[in-house]
Length: 390
Image (tube, rainbow, N blue to C red; front, side, top):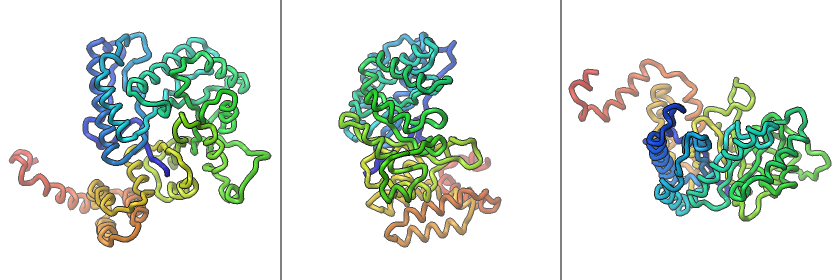
């Protein structure tokens, strides 16, 4: 069974935005206001995930503004204990697994001592959030190994040395992933052997920064699938996950066309995703999508792999997209309606392919007016005279 998740933000969900402020305005009073707002936003996102059966979510590092900076001296984990507990109870009751991913400036293997100290402080903050939510050790902190700084062996050794300094509250949650520049999946697995850290396999990073697998045993299936989602590396990474670490996690993303290597696509392509899914569907893994449209792609992918094949779920999706389709292509609008009326055995892939094709079309004036008039029909009776005039 494969669980699908997404990272940090939920598009189109009311009251789910995270807020911050500039440093000079970060008074205790302002920080309390922002933290309360952000925890409420997080709870609304979790409620959305529960409704949509999303079992995996990465919490934004910006949940607690300036949490690892001197300006924030608030004991926020105590001040907001009730809110944290309420959210944690929802997570546990719904079996939603959460994680966090410290940012690019959290570099444990930096040769700069100040950078390392700030990195450890940042890791401590992230671990404290997951502890405040009462999550078990299956809720992870994801980080890259760091920079090479001219000597990869020394870079790895510095990571090992600094890792030994970490508090157990961090160690029990820390996982590493391959990156798109410096450290391959083989490097991450070698480091895992030394420290016992679980490894996340990132598909796009591996595509950009691959490694050879010399003298390894292959199956016939491997030989046919020597690409960026090579099952060999996924299985090898899976061996690093112990029972207390929870299910193996994979990061999945698609390259944005025409953008620099490593740029995430705006949405998840149905055909690319299904090709990948068929290679891993027998594995027990959690699949974190890294994509610009966040929850929209997560719901799409969940519907694509669902065993239930409920047309009702696609009809709910259609209600959100139908006027965007109508203003682009009335013909596609009618074709998708016909597809859903057929109640065919498995319309999900065809449905999303048609959506993806149509959304690449620019709205046409006549079709856009037609779509707007359809939408106006929902509000015409309740609108004021001034609203009708506008």
